[in-house]
Image (cartoon, rainbow, N blue to C red; front, side, top):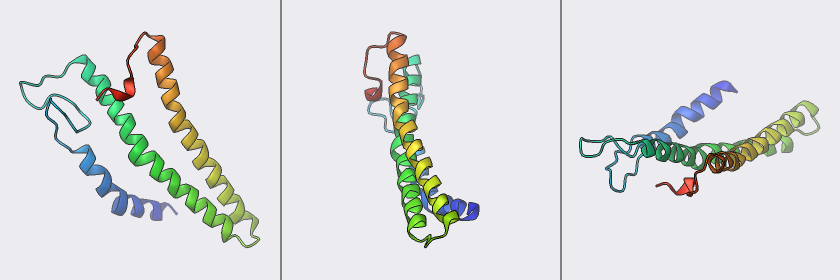
Length: 131
């Protein structure tokens, strides 16, 4: 099973992830994960760190967590469907479904945690719209 995961990751997901990480950015209208430091006219400042963190969070939710959760929900459902009375296979399918659902809840719940912490330290802006 580990070999299948790594083959899937390297052949299918890695080519989708790497271009988004490697996008070059200019200071005005930067599209990459890091919004500054491209040249001398665009130095990095402290707020650029928080913009970068928001972009990393957004990237992780949109391109990593959600597709993997959908994939695992599908695999769990298929395992339950093909179990044909085999309790071990049905149990594995249920565990996969539960893990995918818990992962989604944690990933999307982390937005609430981050928002609460930022509000507690006094940040009043919309952190998810920093860029």
